Structures are given as structure tokens and as C-alpha cells.
Amino acid sequence: MIGEGMTILDILCDHQETQEVFRRYDDVIGECVMCNHMFETLEEFCGRYGLDCAKLTTELRAAAGCM
Image 1 (tube, rainbow, N blue to C red):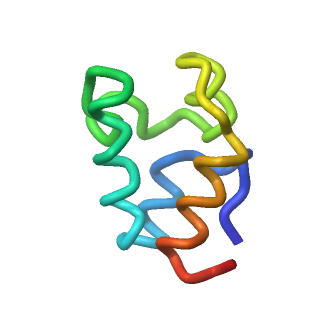
Image 2 (tube, one colour):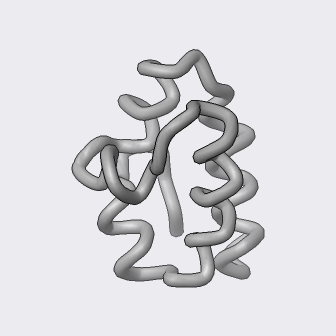
Image 3 (tube, rainbow, N blue to C red):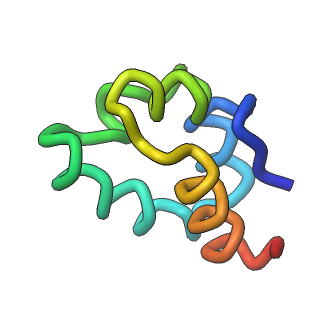
């Protein structure tokens, strides 16, 4: 299960299908998520950019098929 305490790297390693979700956020934050934030947790990443962590987590779980 994908959770807010997981790093972006761990999520991508376990669920490669989440790449598309992270790519959509490149435009939102103005830089490549997978290039610059791999070692941050979802919570840290969302806090840095003022993003809704629950929403992102839900999007990632849906992409990974673990709803």
C-alpha cells in the first residue's frame, strides 16, 4: 500500500505505473519530480510545494491499482 511516509523512489520501485502521475506533477511544480525529489517522502514533497498529500496519495494508489 502506498503511504505518505514512503519515498518517491520506493513508490516507483514498487509501482512503476505511477511514473505518469509523477510526470503530471512536473508541470505543477515546474521541475522534474523524478529527477529532483526521489529521496523525499510524499509528505515532505507535498509540504515543500503546498500540495494536497491525500490527493496525490489517492492518485498514486489508483495508478498502482491498490485502492
